[in-house]
Length: 115
Image 1 (tube, rainbow, N blue to C red):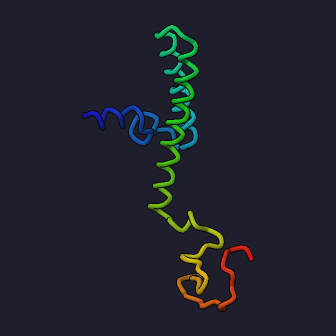
Image 2: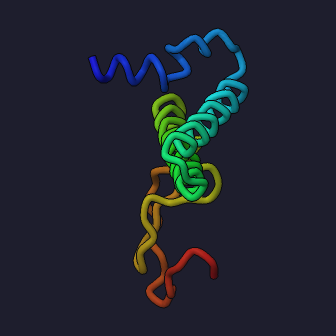
């Protein structure tokens, strides 16, 4: 029940915001709602200092959640997106891997990516 309640409020793919087709607009609306609840909570407690702490905490938590979910979705659908550019499985002093093939390096090769 707790997970369903959380998803009904916080998951923009399940809550009524799911009807908004643009994910970035949904994210913006969720941010505005989070700021609103920070303000309401600080008025309830009666301190503007509490607003500052709760606003920062909400922004950090929500940003971390969105970054994690986004990374997981990209990793699940297209993991090669996360490793574009020059990357090797291993770079040691004796060999390196390029596109799944092992290449032996000369004995005097110092190693490192930027020689």
